[in-house]
Length: 306
Image 1 (cartoon, rainbow, N blue to C red):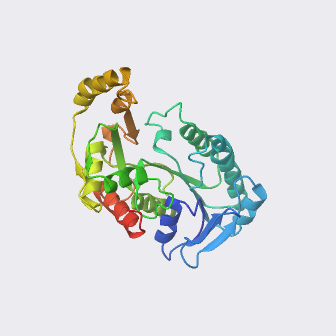
Image 2 (image 1 turned 120 degrees about the horizontal axis):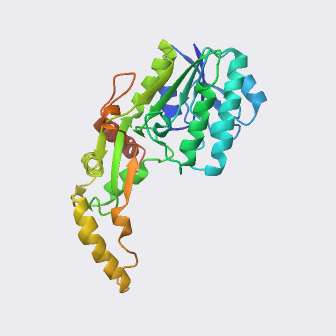
Image 3 (image 1 turned 90 degrees about the horizontal axis):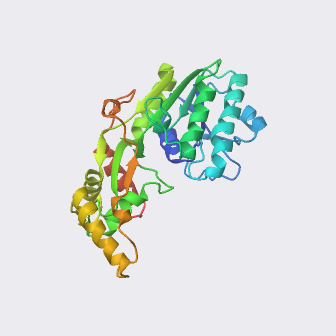
């Protein structure tokens, strides 16, 4: 099976290319300006861009299946053009090329059973892509994957650095004096395995990839177990932060002692949590969330980032 992978140089794309194995002939679709230095040795590459229909037609020549990972994640201005219009161009080119399977990496907030954030351009762009895939007829099978918060090795873009480096660089951390965050963590291997499952079994439809819902304390303490040094995570209950620490900091701010008020101490961050009945779902056997965090830390350490 020949598989065209978009977003091949990204976090999930790299892990997929290293994990596909010999059963698939992977073709990494890269933009002309992209570096291919981190791709596996010997992997075939083809230059194409989601904004260029002719390049997509050429890239799909001889391809049996498409794994569409490419997306604009942080640039809100590029999301409509890349995530929605780009997906539409790729879908049209795939239909003309006669591919058999189209696997699409979505986001948890685009799943029909998970409320989408109307203020998130990224989620809204993915919802628009969903309409292109599931509200139209296609000559190929369509599979969509909805992961929560992904950890794992090969995070060259340092998307998880904000969680790991504070633990590695501090002796004491006190949640929720920073923020009151909640997480749902999955291993990147779960995503790679689910993609392979869709390719190999033609498992059409929508597939959640979720772990258990976790507290900030659970995440920090697990990271602390594996980072160099001896960071200690000391828990301060949210109620204490809200009703004692915040008012104190607000009062100090009013008299000019504290440079900031206490609002930041009671902010709540959500990194992919879902309803309890939607937790720990995947079309494949999952790795543990502890392994996801531990192996991410080990990779950061191995490349000299800790």
